[in-house]
Length: 322
Ligand code: AFP
Figure 1 (cartoon, rainbow, N blue to C red):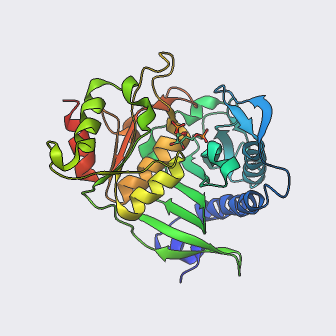
Figure 2 (cartoon, helix red, strand yellow; figure 1 turned 90 degrees about the vertical axis):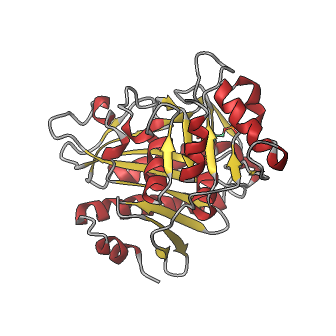
């Protein structure tokens, strides 16, 4: 099995980007260890603080954020970071070549039940003429990402990453402490009989999503004439990993549960990196209005509608919006 750096060199990834990726992965190895020790180390449960999005932070959210932020900012490669757990961007090295957006621990509600969680990251090139402390430098579309990935803290710690030359799976080998390539050029099957959506929001969705899901749930008695299975992990890392592994459609549609917050998932550190991974694996990553990676961001913590996964099924879902 190939080690990480040679695998990246095979994809012609520039050396400074390889160095940054190795720095990020050093942070994830430390987070993986802290996650495995959380109960023993008194790191379960919540803090008394809210993040900028009004969500109560878990103790592990805070630890993972500090670890990731400090290691990445100290590397010298990074001009600024933005994180789900930070109010605004944080400046790094004025000459740093890259911007890193991340969700230090996605799936926080799974922490206390010892279920799937992960770290998501997205890398853009820095804009030389913008100051390191300007949040505006993060307002770059997803198609400008130079790397995206996630690390899933599951039964094995897995890295899934793309630098624009396919999506590859790696596993953390604790015997030598590095990530080993286990599957190159993963492909999302075009067709699927599996969907992922939080069904408890059903009555709040727009009519097209109501109709699409109703047809899936109707199974072989409905217009699709086939049985569809449903899965929901409540951690995008887990749900997208399943889609990348065996196909499926994953959606967090618009809803009117809270009129001030029609979307749940965050563009910069959830939807964009996952879109890059899904598209590089032959899938589609859309909103009901267009490609996620073509959205011009207006805010670091912007939220967005997400419909992604097996290409034919995403097209089918979008046909209900026409
Ligand atoms: P956190 O980033 O706060 O952990 O939230 C996880 C998440 O944004 C995403 O990973 C899940 O798909 C989604 O929330 C789960 O949402 P529900 O609470 O509706 O199940």
